[in-house]
Image 1 (cartoon, rainbow, N blue to C red):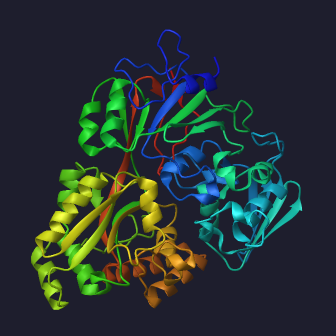
Image 2 (cartoon, rainbow, N blue to C red):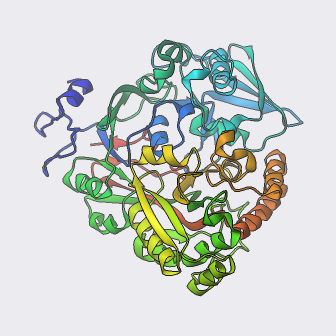
Image 3 (cartoon, helix red, strand yellow):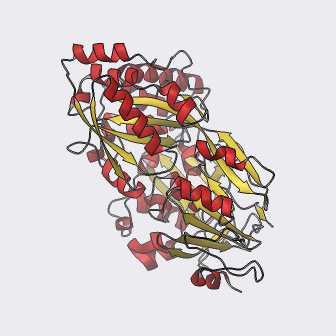
Length: 525
């Protein structure tokens, strides 16, 4: 029986092993079919166009449908060949020439070649491109150094940069660099995000809104066919419902297990996986208007929040207290001399008094659930209590994940004073460059939603991304961290260890430090 039959009937029985339930209320005796992996995701995807999304929730699907020129080597953030078989870098670091894999086709049957690679990056970077309107392209910052993409021959493509750019290869391995079918974009235009076509190990079958995204095995994948017949990604926003589904057998793999639920999976019927990675959970503070326009008030918020209690009590020890904007997973660039803001309510009150603030009113945006957000409602409620204990008057507004992003990413001005946020990044450049520079204010196309600005930080970040010596890059990033911690544009909360749970029917699954789900080698009995 075809997978489309399973998804449309929305039922299944263990006897036939050919029917797949996609509704939210599955019976306790549910049995998912062999060869079909059902993944409990944290939210509905926003789109299935790699260039148009920013959330790890979406990336977890996309990394199984598309390939990039390069990819992260399993278990690391080191770059290795993928659709490119190799590359050469010019002596001045401004030209990257890639040899492309021959004989690769997209799921729609069109050919992969240098023209398609050029199309992908021109579409994203050139506003006058005929398919630029298929965007938006929120992470095009990743490739802002690209001056030109040149087709040398059908299997050779050259990128010319406006200056040396150290994170370039790593950014190509990130989902924003995944290669999409030119033919499919030309056919579907702005609707490509609902009709994706890549070269990956699984091809897109169906997206049923708020119910499931279904992908099937690509037997002709250049790196070998996947072991699974299909994967079904189900959006289950509520963590308790996701947990119940996992326990009932309605899903085979659950990502971002609530810390309080981990104990329910301590049996031979499940495997709990953990993996440290470059993650930081923080609170964006509106530095442009309202109480947090004053540095002393931003520092007061950092002293007021009991981060040790959040990590130990709310997150059940699955994270570490954050000291600044750079995750310690980037060991070479992390400033180990920084100590987290201690929990000091008296210091917080003194700073508020120093700033002349008495019971400052704060609007706090919280999400019901979203990628890397840990336990957002419980965290938000605890943070609200800590801030109120030192004199802040905090009002929480709660939003569904994609609605939340739509409120926060365009900037907090005129809307809120504070918002939860989490980033999982691929390079020490990524988060600060996209979210802390003055030129990354939302009206300039970035994610600096709190409008923080410090010319010295801008200078350090611009210099670090063009430095070709890693020791020099490290020095610049460490200096940046010291300044940012002092300026406190965020409340630095936690660095999380990602987790997932699989049923005993799942084999060969592992979490990646990239926080992506790579399912090609997974087996489902």
